[in-house]
Image (cartoon, rainbow, N blue to C red):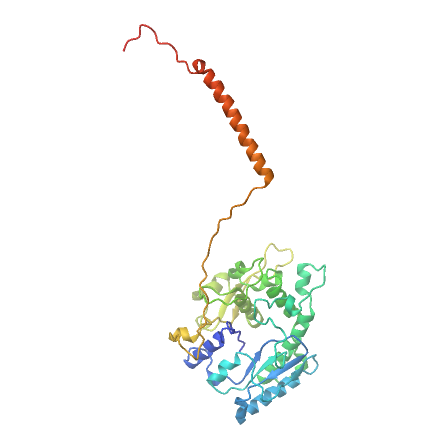
Length: 383
């Protein structure tokens, strides 16, 4: 199961809510069904993949045995790649990670993969400055937007190696027995994701994977990764992640647009198991518009709201009560000072209008007896 947590910098809002729902039986998977936990943290900053584990839970012999199995799988998965798996000291605690939320609920075997031993290599990790320039994402000059979209950068290659190791570990832990060297991540897919999230969100690839209902979210502004306390709408990165996962794990169907959009038109057993999206698709050559299709996937969204707000326990010491400031608009009026030249022109124009008015009034006053004399009445007029 692949999970992307939201709001983790606010004291693990996303992961703590998932564990909270698992405890109450309001999540498809229960805590006792979790075999192990593999988390990708800050990666891609080098060729060393540091494997962090929890020293406290490893004191349990059953947990230790499973952790050793994960470490062995990681070691085998790095063969033939530029990545080397290294383990820090056994006494070193876990770095900030979503795994903490699960360990609070009970002893679960797991590892946290990072590109650093003790300190972040990217100082701007998960901040407003965690942008393309600060992670070394560079493109050659002169490339068109379409060429940049498909250009495989050094950052993409590094992340592809991490993806390859991750895929091999998951395959092996799920019971796969084939040769692991045949499993490799797709560098072009990684390049397209980096370009979409960090450079230009409106491109041919992003348009092809989004549903027709989500096309309106694309714009010219940089993608905003800020996590808001508002629950009225899903932020843009979440929508993109949802559609990327749906496209790589889902299945194209032969359903019509009406069947795809209307649950009552679909088989009853599919309504609660799958999410259906009407995907715009690639723009075909010599076609006026892309060929859309219905995608069936098991990707679902769940609100990342701290359990403290669900329990209305504002003084909770277990769950986060982070919130944000109230945003209120303001207005201002700005009065500009005219230039010296415009002031002189305005003054001279005013003086000219004044002089013309004086001359005109003098002339009208002097000729008033002619201009305003009414015709004489006839002497025989009666009333």
